[in-house]
Length: 175
Image (cartoon, rainbow, N blue to C red):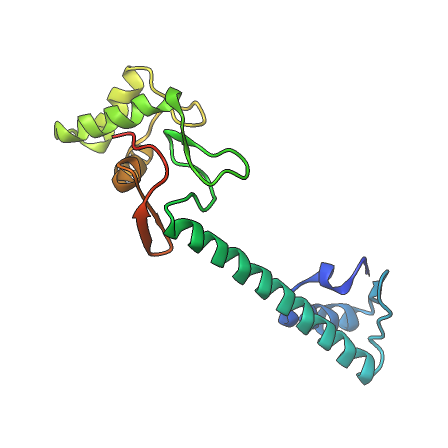
């Protein structure tokens, strides 16, 4: 097995050691790293691999923590923390604020109007489809998509929530 660096095999120590000891060595597969000199045949070599895999996992965990911390700080200020934007909004790459998607806001507004009239999820989906509204992907509405819209009432009202943090959003309210 040829890898560029050991951390390209895995950034989890447990997975790295499992692959090397239980898969590669058990099946006579040699591990070769282009950037590192690895020796799986000696106890010292395997210990070095173990240490390299510890540092790979530390780096992965540090990056994850840093990204999470950044998202939480954005959320505290009402900024967008990433991920897929809800229907009615779009997110430009590297933007910290959701932008209104004018082509889809009508479906969001209409879903809340129909819910206020007491219609079921299926009835709302049927009505949205009959009126020519489509999902973000251009498909017909199903009750599941309607439910997702209705569950995000706070977002559509201008409040942003992320990881248990709720703040007045920097995005424009739709409803």
